[in-house]
Length: 109
Image 1 (cartoon, rainbow, N blue to C red):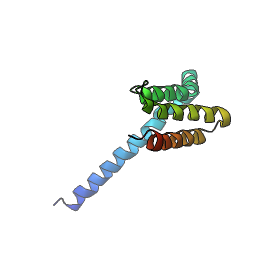
Image 2: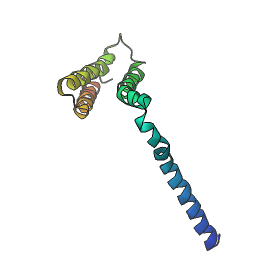
Image 3: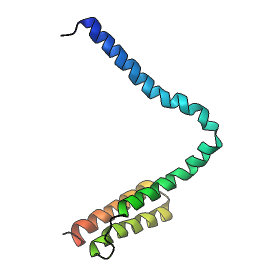
Image 4: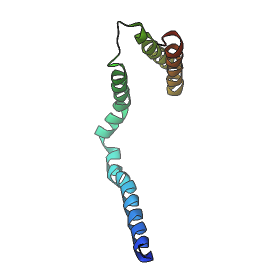
């Protein structure tokens, strides 16, 4: 069994490494806050990420089959709710509820 000094040093080293790894992103990103490129990316990335997620989720969707209607209906509801209310939480919850309801009742296998 390790002695007390070894255990204390191990805890201190682990604490220092954890603190450094958590502080590093803030120290590195602080100078970038005034950057025009970072500002541009901060306005464009959320929409880009959502498009990538939609494509990823729908890439294997069997379009000619009826079971593809549940995700497509959920997508339509999500887009419609977001255009109507501009509330991301409402849009996500509404689309999820429609998908779960359709997939578990109408299009259940």
